[in-house]
Image (cartoon, rainbow, N blue to C red; front, top):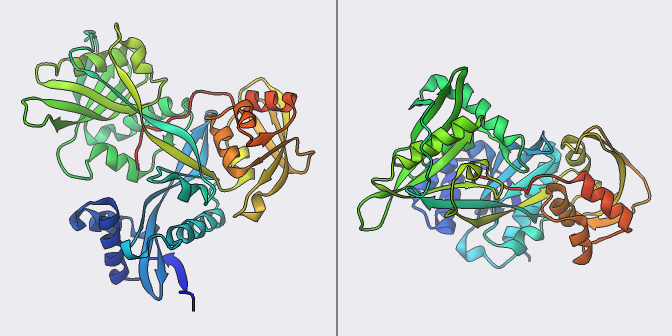
Length: 393
C-alpha cells in the first residue's frame, strides 16, 4: 500500500520540534537557530506528514511586491525542507503542490521563493523571474566626500520615517518588497546574532536616508568588511552623504557590500569605476491568481491597449483559459474570453509579468506563441525596470 500523506499547519510542540530538526538538517544550521526561527513563525508554518510523522515543511511569509508602481499581494515561501530519509520520493513536490493550492485559496496573487534547486519549483509552476544582485567595492574606492547633511544613530522613533524612505525607493523598482515585520526584523537584527548598526541622514525637512550595516570578519587579517543590510535615500544629497559615511570607514573596512539591482541609484554617484555587480541568487515567481495578479499590478501611463491571453496551468484550474486584459492609464481590467492570441503557460507568464523576459525572447525560446503585433503590445504593457529583490528570505 502506498504511504498516505497529509498536509497542514503544525499541530503541537512535537511537530514543531520535528520541523525544526529537519530544517536544521536541510540547511546545515544548528537546532538552536532553527528552533526559534520556526517557533516565532509557527502560525505560518506548514508540514507534510507520512504515516502521521512530519517528513517535510515550509514557512509562508505574507507581504507584497511592487510592479508598475503598485503593490501586488504576494506570499513568500521559505525554509522548504524534507527529512533526509524521505528525499527522492516526491515528498517535496507534494508539499509544494499543496502549498500552492492553499495560497490560491488564501487570496494571494503571487508567490516568490529563492530556489535551492530549480526543477522542483518548476513542477509547482514557479519560474525564474528576477535576481538578487550583490554589489561590492572597496571602502577606499567609494571616492565620495560630501558631508553637508548630518548623520546620527537611528532611534526607535525613526521607524515610520525609515519605512517611508524605503517605500519611496521600493515602489519605483520592479519586484521589491512591501516589507512585512519579518523582513524588517532581518534588516535590523542579524538572525545569526552579532550587532547591527543603523544611521540616519538628516536634511532640512527631516530624514532623507539611512543605512543598516554589520561588521563581517576578514579571515585572520585585521579589519573587517561592511555588510549593508539596507541602504536607502530619498534625495541625491542623502545618497552622497551615505556614501561618504561608508568611505569614512576606510581605515579599517576593506569591502562594502549590499544587495540591490543592476539599476541601483547609488552607483550613479560613484566618481569612478571599480564596483562589481554579480547575480547572487535568482528568485522564482508563481502566478497564483491570474486575474488578481494582472489587475493589482501597475502598467505604463498614457497607453491604451488590449492583451488576449491563453494561459495553461497544470495545478490551478481557475488560471486556465482565455483572458482579455484591457489596459488604460496604468490600470488593467481583466475578464474571461478573447481570442487567446498569446498562448503561454503560467511559468512563461511569470517571467513576462515581472519584465524578466520579453515576449519576443519567450517566443524565440518556444514558450509563447502569437503574432508579432500581439508580442509588441505585451512588450509595451510589461515594460519597466529590470526586476530585482534586495531581501533574501
